[in-house]
Length: 116
Image (cartoon, rainbow, N blue to C red; front, top):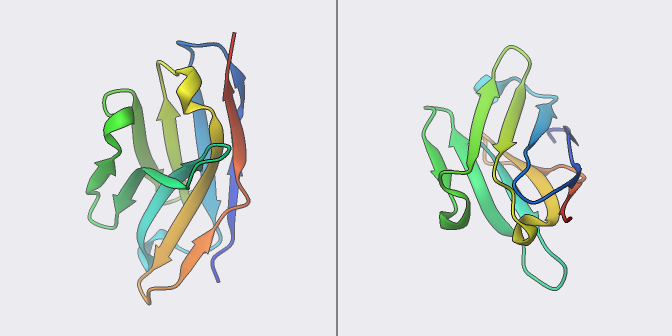
């Protein structure tokens, strides 16, 4: 199973920015997709953004134009740049990886809190 280590969460004021990182234990060449999901209290986990091995990206409508997903294959790391943060972005953010052999792995989660 792929080990995923997330970092970069924290407390930020509305309108601020944060960058999340997710480092994988597996070579990016063995990963079909990597993505970020989030789960707010009392809500289901939802897709935020994902990037495929062909660099195709997909975003939730609620974050389009504010969040950007990118990857550094050398560092085996996927990033989520979050700008213009809103209180409704508050959630635990999880990194997910799907390997070429269809195995799914999740990170431990990192808390993002947007509050004044």
